[in-house]
Image (cartoon, rainbow, N blue to C red):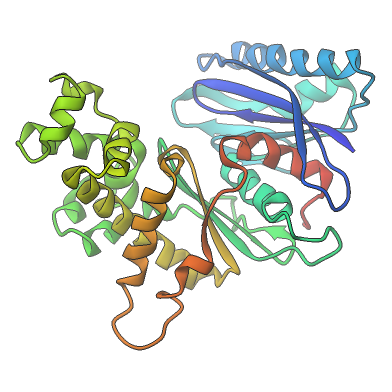
Length: 338
């Protein structure tokens, strides 16, 4: 089966042809990427169509028949109608994504929140050993990037909640204060205090590194940035940590503890088979994953505990940067239960 997966974020549109055959991992080809116009519904639609057009033409030129299109989009999505109600950092209001794509390409279109789509992609395609006929696992997917979001899959369905807003674990007031009392006082963009997103998102992680460098606590970062502290970002911190820089390792350990608190909530809330971590911050690989797992293990205070055994069920995304596109494709390859 060949479908097009589309991943729409605040700055870009990515798309690809997803080929999924029973019992085999998905193959992603005919990739395309372009900027998104966040200013108007008309401009946003045009920027989406421009990227999907490239994949559609490529697929047709190779004789591929596209069966459907799946779309993952940041923001509040009405998955019944395929309408994006609103999204942070974009001026779009009630953008009819499904209607526009169906009118242009004449195939069924499914639209879902991007983190929910990534969670579905991980549930369907994230385990290469999973047989297509086996039960879809219960998973929670946590993305740590520009923000911190969570999607969950249980019983073959996406857990959306009453109005589609389930899974905003990055916005639990006060949770960050369990790691650092000072973090509990930080005001989040959502208006609450002590949200983990406010202190552990990619930008917040970078900001912590910049602050340590200004205070003389991270000379390695000052050197790596050649004195321009604005250049310090999450990837620079994790790169130095991987190389053994003591201060960078402490910053990564701090980040890991914040993420571990979020995982602990997801673990209790969803009781999943696995929790999968994705997003730009997790691109650092083992150094960050180990910090998260250590942070979670340290929450156990006595005896054998699933927290101590978290390396078997807290995993890095196998879909990586393609989680959005493949997750979008997964929505129409294996449709979630209602």
